[in-house]
Image 1 (spheres, one colour):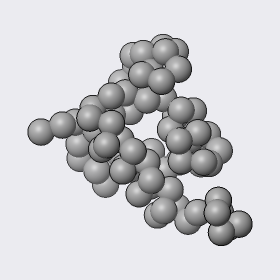
Image 2: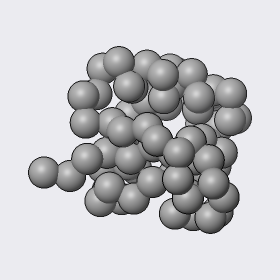
Image 3: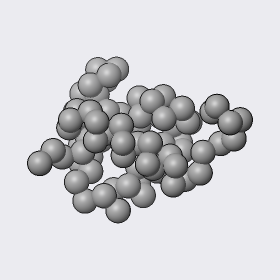
Image 4: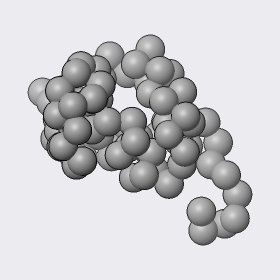
Length: 80
């Protein structure tokens, strides 16, 4: 992090939401999302659980991750 502090849970959720929204419905696994947000994978998984409860258009399913191409549980934001 540029300021030397860990991001808050809300900041992490916002980073993940923004990335998924910008990615036009592409599916990403928790590890790739964690890398994108600059956080650990456990922290990303916790944030994704929260996002699934608050963001109605967040999808979770098993398929290929668009970044690492592994068969995983992946997350995407449904486009309109």
